[in-house]
Image 1 (spheres, rainbow, N blue to C red):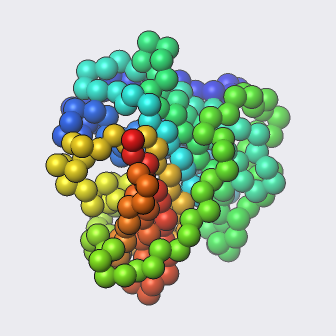
Image 2: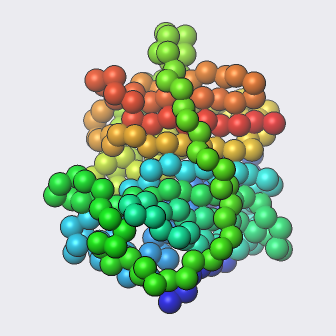
Length: 244
């Protein structure tokens, strides 16, 4: 049983943004897919969890970008889990080209019971507690404590209706679909001038097909702050995007 998982990836056109760089959305996609591949090797795949009436949920993620891959690059993507706590666990990610770190990240995960909605204990769903974790941690600083944005009219960036293309196996809006939505609040002209160094997102409430989400944002000292609200005003997601 391996405590890490690696995959070689060629950066294809479908993975790139208008600038020819691997898109932020794609970096989040790779992290999610690597985690799923490794979970299957550890005996806690989507299907394993379904048999135990539970599923993985991302609580929050931070990704740091140093020199994002570009079209045609051949890169190595790797992931490894941290030591699990009572009910949550960290998973780490890294993208490398010729041994040079291009991006890295960390996700805090939990497992939710399908029937009760409660968070399950780590030792209750078949996670290999005997696995010796890789000691290395990346993006290990405490996650951001987001301040609530005041939803003033001038801060409303868009109203986004959740469509079928955003829905995943859990029948709610996919983690990465939120990244695609937030990045879509910028024009290509804005992105051309933007050097993104870090993205962090905190998932608070699930969103579902047909919901009209209000996406608020503000800019302060090189950082874009986002707050996504459900139709009833409840906060679904908070995020930040750092630029240099």
